[in-house]
Length: 70
Image (cartoon, rainbow, N blue to C red; front, side, top):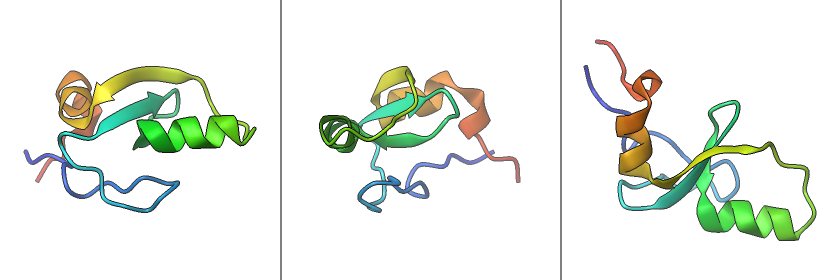
């Protein structure tokens, strides 16, 4: 099994999400940078509720659906 680290991009800024980046995971399992989420929230965009937040590394290790089978 291999991890998705280095393969996921933030839907707001389109930059790759790095291990140490602070991210949010919403209820449909979309990962985005914490600051991008906050920026969209301030702009009044309709966002889904947050399921979890923390470093991307922590999120990947917490949720097994991030592991890819080879």
